[in-house]
Image (spheres, rainbow, N blue to C red):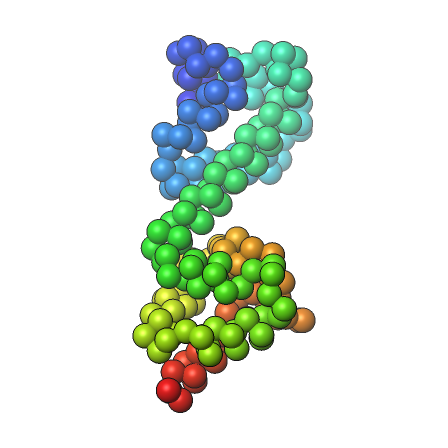
Length: 187
């Protein structure tokens, strides 16, 4: 296991081993590791059996880190999930910077309402930028990213914006796409 090798190879602490593992691992490797850990945690074994397995397969002196083996594994799993989320957000930002600019520049906590921000955008932004943003919104809406990744990205990019009553951020973005499309046709 990478944690054993890294700790034995001089990385020193379990935290340093986990950081190194996440730094050198691809998103796919992290997802595989996450699923492996989740499957292990959900196995029909007692906590004592799981802890015994973790202890026998790691070079960690658990009393020194103040965690039981299961607590440690759950902590690592949480860190891996956060790393996967971070990678997914970076991928979306890199693949669609226009969308990130659109959401962050027009939809943030300082707006009066989403409708007011969209109306202001439609009045002030040129047809060329409307078309570019419409393309970015449409590509994002039709992308292979999971709905959860899309919602997380919208929440991050549109810092502090809250959904309209009873609809999700993604549904709101779809409505914006349709309104921009209609606006472009009228120009």
